[in-house]
Image (cartoon, rainbow, N blue to C red; front, top):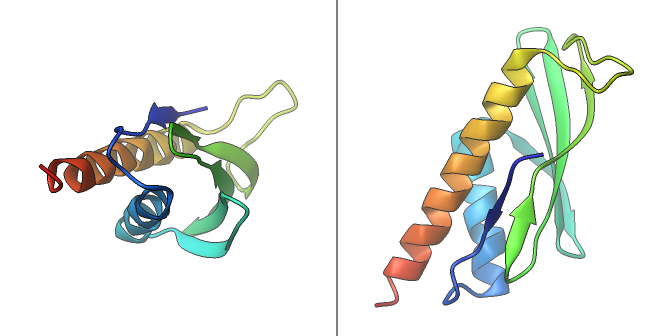
Amino acid sequence: MPSGSVPQAVTLAEVKQGIIQALGERGWVVTSSNNQVIKAKVTVRSHVAEIEIPYNKESYEIKYVSSQNLKDEADGSIHNKYNHWARNLQLDITKNLSKIASAKH
């Protein structure tokens, strides 16, 4: 599960903002956002993936929830495309949070 740390100067509201911005930039649609958990879904052709991202002032984590047509197996394996999407999302979230923190200096 991709995860990342949050820079010290970033507030909880800014963490949420940085995550939602990254989701939108990558084509994910936020399906709910409450109790410090953002749920999102992406559809690419016939492939669908759903995730949830719990977050706090210290860290966030991208958790797989479900998928369609991504060959998710009982042993925990899944199509490489999902892993690629999750990794890119993690990089974008980290980049957004770093930008927010550096803007405060």
